[in-house]
Length: 222
Image (tube, rainbow, N blue to C red):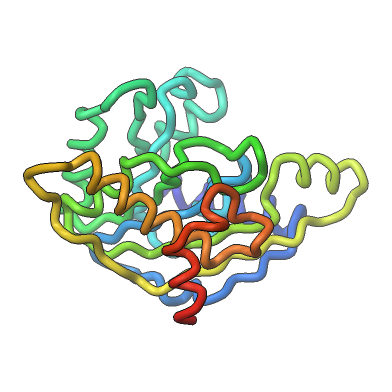
């Protein structure tokens, strides 16, 4: 399968450019429907996701603007990615994701929706919370550090390798989607997801969630 070839290539790339430290990566389930959420620092994040997850049934969501890109468009098609319209509610993409989750696939998603311009966590969008609440599937948060595009360029110019850390948190689930006040519900649950991720990264990476009360609760409970 092409995904196997992509993984082999990704392994070579990562070994050349980075020292990767993974914490509790082996806790990710190897079968069954599950949602993995992570912060998004740079383009390298996608390569790490393809490489480190043992499964071959990962659902990858990519912005439609890359669909005709000579590299990312081709790669997305080979990996059977779901093309997502980020400018509006993309119900077609959501239906595709739900169908594949019901088939027992793993969804990998960055709730921020795009790479952080500040190299710290930005406000999460409700898509991941919506999918998790509607499906009832377990969520595994992952915190990434060291994958910033700026660092990659700086280290590459100096022939120095990146120091990358990937930390997997404990799984959790969200309450079912209510019939009323859905916007408020999704906002609250998005904060829950993002704070779970923030608890897994160094303080300098926590961005807009650094002072969130829920994050403080999670850190105190550790």
